[in-house]
Length: 508
Image 1 (cartoon, rainbow, N blue to C red):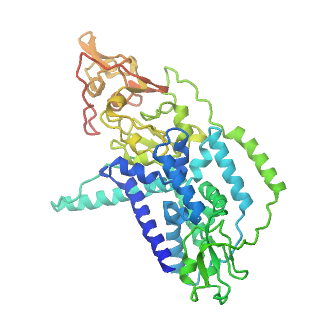
Image 2 (tube, one colour; image 1 turned 90 degrees about the vertical axis):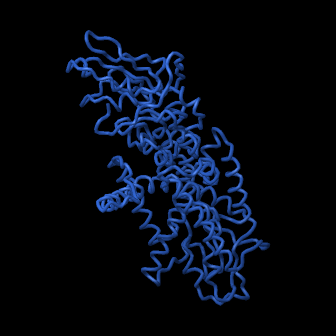
């Protein structure tokens, strides 16, 4: 059945390319509805989204689960972009070492299932730390957003600079904001570890660590269609075992550990005698060795204790003298809700046209590592944009209409007169007022000069004032996070306008 492998390669290629384009679409040309439809099939984000606003996510979950019960874990090799990336690493290993073998090795189901239970239980308890670190789609997104995207931008800008020197303007420079060193190092370490594991052990990550793989492994034990040996055709050449990237084919005993099979169908394609078939298995299969329930109980008991340490930390309220907690994008509704639903895939970071959304490190605490935050030192939230909520696959950022988004108050501006250049240098400025899209900041007479005045009932916390403020090292006006998002009033006396876009070296 060589067509099975062709189907797998075709579907995997399309899904991988689409997922890659979502993160590398510099012009935001792909409609958000297409992104949402494709990402509904990503089981990890879909399961998180189902607890809030199911919608397409529920359809995606039912499709993946039904497919697994019918044909096995084909999700891992067809629909998971991180799985396809591992297959590319495995293909590299086989190209470099033509005799590379992946001999049968019984997966450590006890460890895999226990880890999956711990990750899911921790997420239900309010900590997304483990899920953020090991959920496959989110890791694929961070690899593209934090590593591949900056490299492409640097390469593009170098070529554009060279061409512009020759008066050729087919390319234009793309702004590149600084990537946090901690985030970069964490992503590099994960990618390096994934490459080494795939290069040497095949789909080890999928069958030992991945929480999605753990869920599908349990379901595939009951799948209707399976890969089985045809005793009358098999000549015991062992080729099927050597090519199995999941190391689940036991050629010696003529059996396939289907709970570990990722549905790549390489074994069937490689068989020289049609000794393997894929269909309904009528005969009962040899039972796997029973799980050591004693060890399982010890691990599960230990995991219960770990949850006490993995709970999301209580976020203290910000004081008037400090910026306080990180600011969550409009649609996040509250810091607690956002951190409990975000898997840190960073699709919103890649999509954000102003790049104000940046990956955090420990700003949300250990449990919120890599989750996006508003960084007003980079830019500010564009008044006429709501793309982040439209592409978020988990519903951590709810989709909002533009009219709704323009009234969401994610924070409030605070003005410190002692730091303002009107006070320190006795000169007019007005950058904050000029950039404020809701006119919550207005200039009022201050002797012979004019001084900013903030009316927070109209402030949405977009950060335009903070970004534009020229004072250093501290901003004279800054946005303080709302732990729970509020609703700003809409001015009736002044026409609302988007904040003025100006070059970075002249913010006011």
